[in-house]
Image (cartoon, rainbow, N blue to C red; front, side, top):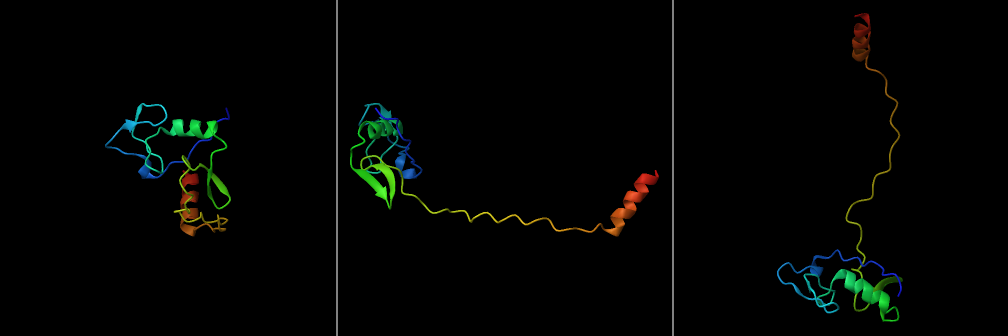
Length: 108
């Protein structure tokens, strides 16, 4: 069997905080749901995808998101603005009053 590829389930719709239901693959209780609201553990869904590599695929553009039955959430655009490029520190000139304080410290 192929190594399971981890699914990306970030959407809150994958978690039902009120009702645990039996996983359709292993039968144990789970609060997790697939995109089609099928109760399934994420690890069970990943193992199923690895066991059935020939299953129909779910794609977003050219990106393979997994099988139609169990797949990643659709890619989202970045919500954070891109980081600003670092600007080199400006050349600072010493302030005269700081130089005066430094000279007073060295006299003591």
